[in-house]
Length: 178
Image (cartoon, rainbow, N blue to C red; front, side, top):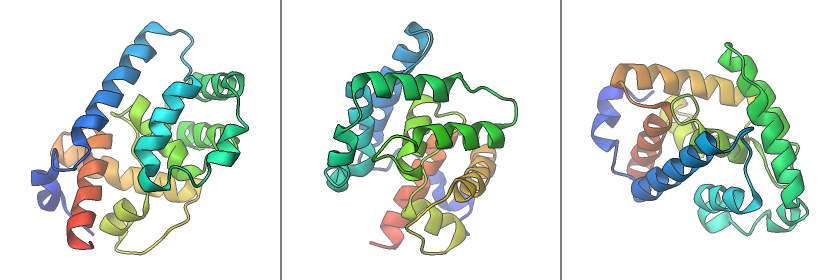
């Protein structure tokens, strides 16, 4: 398991750190101005491109079935869930978001991480491997909650947002397992 000391120098090292900051800033502005908060198809496509990178086209056919009205309705419902118990909140939000065709737990976690970076992170094989020293390519909501708890612990030690801690973990894994 990686320690906070091992990733402390990687906070801004990811090749997409500045793009990530830009997207988070744009979504923060949207969140502050749009009540109730939801994401449009265009805003979600930006998240999908950021998260999926070279695999962006993989679920494109399924995602194309979702219209702007569906995206608005589903994301609004997910963001309206606000509970003091983050595990419960994450479980329900991920469940709602993964109801969208073409959106699995990793992509749903990216939506949460970019819209609420202080509380949420993105789950993927790189972060998982850095934290748990285990190869995994398929993730459940339970896996996400376990990963989030560990990233949150590291974020607390570093005094960083959860999402930035996760990005440093991603970069740590990329450098150690090219």
